[in-house]
Length: 503
Ligand SMILES: [Cu+2]
Image (cartoon, rainbow, N blue to C red; front, top):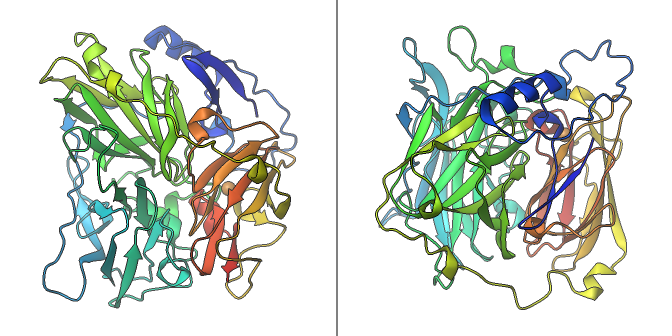
């Protein structure tokens, strides 16, 4: 794998994902069609004997995404309304349904409180709510609150199965900084299928008082963007059992918030987008089609130490980024879209601006404390994690997930340094996005180097290149049993997961 450092406005470290890289020929075509800057190609590493490895998600196998035709206005997931006068504040139901993506036969899908994806849940910083979760599927599921620092009993990991027809009430306390989190199923060996068929929703922790002047009118200037790729069969079905790839199911159809061929009509000059890579396995590098810069303001767990101006952002599965785009500075006669790394327009914009200036100039901050103290940086490594393998041969520290085995123990409230090593295999290895439940950690270093400015914020998932060693400062504020795992969902289902008991 390679690493490219670009100097743009501000230092930015860009990690080019294996799954993102085009062949040279495709890249040249893209250059001609879209005027995209060609990234350095150096992918002809020897993969040795490929026999028996059909289906391994090598970078050359990744199907490009179809560009959006811009024929459908982007669906904005509804906000989940609070229930009044009942023993719970919210109800979230996993259910089956159908979605009309294509002319002709509808597609069988899963959704929360609907046919596809789920409503956005907004919690205030410090708020405690009770959520009734109900399983109306015909198979077991769980309800996992990805990124929320809650006790293990409420976390909805694979040990917390809700059988078909059953329900329970969980308590969610948003005792952490404002952030863009999400929720999804986590039943062992069924997660990848259930997410693929449509189970996922946004979960926001909102500031109690807005002191950063950030856009925050939901659906107007503050827009969730769930990027997913999907593979449909000839009957337009998401037939997971037949379509799946044990190394990560990757499709050629791009959906944003479950919308095929989306466009977004932009009415405000300064827009905030909360981007989730909700794919099972695909890595995305997002850019603007006109080459303009934008500003990343938040990582998985909240605001960055300071806003970072950039012209691209890479997210592996389950990572989030909040960005601001100032449309007032852009020529509205030119087509503007969020594209992937190949220049395919994933979300075209239609500009219909009310107001002239973006107001970006009033948005700036620098945290008044260092991202990491000298003491934190000098803590010894006390947890070593080795990610290894591909397809169904994936392991962590040489083992597959066992629900009856506790792999690690850590004391509540005590920070420890976890070193995650992505051990290359004979085929070079692949990116593994590493996620820990129940914590928002800080990246101390990547191969000994300080993290890029856009990773100097709280994280719960981290992209790890083959051969890379990433040190994390991990603190669990609550007790319980938590999963840590690769967020390529098929790897997770194949056992690339361990358990840490926090006491
Ligand atoms: Cu993996």
